[in-house]
Length: 95
Image (cartoon, rainbow, N blue to C red):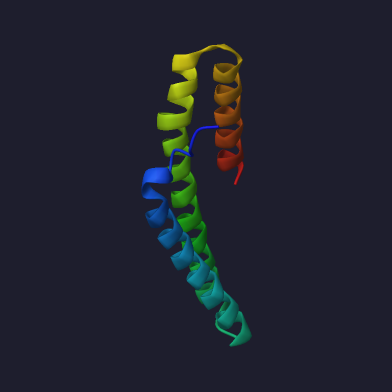
């Protein structure tokens, strides 16, 4: 099995996820502190956008590394990787 496409920038991805984790904790504290609904919703929207950004980055890395390599190799692996990418895109569009 080859390394994930994001291997070269794994530290940056983890840093982004750590920041998102902090944002989620902040939303939790906002609810505990009975903050105004709209303020909480704005923070939830920000977290959602941040997660979508990470997801799009990972998808891009998958397409440019894993899928491109599978297409070069050909065969069943190519079909599998293309199908996986298509399913991932469909899930992201639905979210």
